[in-house]
Amino acid sequence: MSENDNLPPLDLQTVIDLVFTGTFLTSTSQENREVGKYFFCDYFTQLRLRYKDDNRCQLFLDQIEPSIGSTLRAFAVEKLNYKNKINPIESFFASQKNILQSQQGSASILLSLKAFSKSGYLFFTFLLSTLAGSLSSVLFYLKYNDILRTLFIFLIVCQIFILAISFIINLTNKFRFKRLLKENEKNLEKYWKESYDKYESALFDLIISCIRATEQYYPQHKTFFDGHLFPRPELPYLPPNNCDVLTPSRRSIQEIMFQLQDIIRSRISVKPQFKKTEWVLNRIDYRKLGSTYDTIVQSVKKLWKNRNSVLDDRHKEFLKAINKKGRILDIGCGFGRDVKYFDDEGFESTGIDFSIEMIKEGKRLYGKKIKLKYGDILNLEGEFPKEYFDGIWCRGVLFHYNEREVKFIINYCSRILKTNGVIYLQLSRGDGTIIKNISSTDKVAIYYYHSEDSLINIGKKFNLSLLSNLSTENDVCLILKK
Image (cartoon, rainbow, N blue to C red; front, side):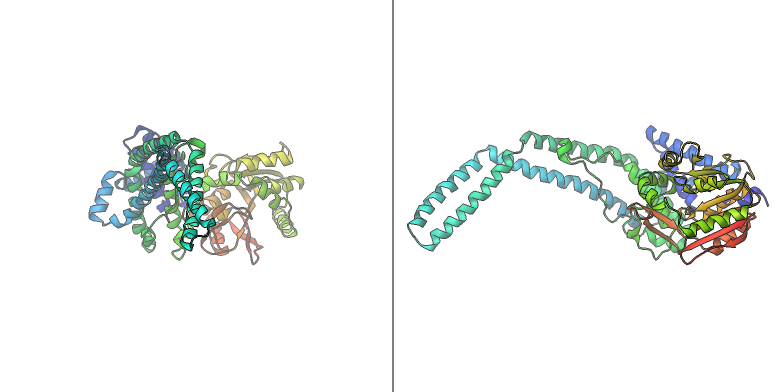
């Protein structure tokens, strides 16, 4: 069996990543092409490291080349009847433009009130109602009929209303509203004419490419692209009291495309029974997950700081299987709680995590001598020698990765693990794929659940056999031996 046979196959996720990159590479904008080159070089480097076969990579690129370019859009609309699936995207962007226009309308109303005030009509109306009110009050005290009493009350209400309007208008500045309308119109044109038009073709090429790939490889999921991709989300706007203009905040169409890619990737990797609304704008790719953990360091530190007796027992089982003072790698070490435990037990331990803030917090807690490194387990080729570690500790990590990525991780662990070395795998028990909160924080992530049998079978493919099954009702806990 060649080394390439042990590596994950080219799949739909790879198709989407490369098609997305290709939309930038084929753009008429120099700026977009530079962005595309950056993404493409980075992703192609990962492909080469993963497959170690330039010919295979090139063959795959040739296969997806027809999915890249503006010709696909015309072909899809005319020949494949995809117009109904493109409409939701057009509706989404149209709704955003309507929001800006409605905000312009609000400004117009206030500006009209200001103009009304300037013309003197408001003052004249207030003076007239005051005189009429005074006359009616005299008649009221002279005990004239109920009609005059009603007129008196009505005029008093009118006076209060006009006074309130006058007070509001006098607090405003008509020049500000004029500037608001002018700048808003300018931003409206700039935002939609320059930004939207710039990315429009790339956006449609992306979604159509993904629809075609999904229908070809995952026909049971093709209905995921029917209806609205977004449940009418709104772009954030800068409040007028900060900038005197109503304008979209500095979030571009490009970022919306990233979100769209995340939505598509999540939809094709989950079971059809999940509700579409659960996925909207909540997909947290593993490449973004590190920055998410950066924001919750202090919260999870309190939750993870103290080990419980069950975890102590698992530590002991793991160390007993190593049976000597060797090297241990902790994958997804967080702030290094377990690395510190292994160090105290006399082992030479190294921790790796994709949250730079977690690493910094660990060094602050345990000192600079503790070996904590920043890195992504999917991109560690060449970081450690082959057959270097006696044990690998992987607790609460694999549920952030799908099956293809788990195979890649376990394969890599097997290569850097010594013969007779052991690997500890632990993750929460569950089925399918869900989005839930990270620990007890308000941040969410996509969680992939893997069964005991699935992990054991993956291990067998990479020379890892089951040594001990410590699984419980809530957790899958396995010790595999090479």
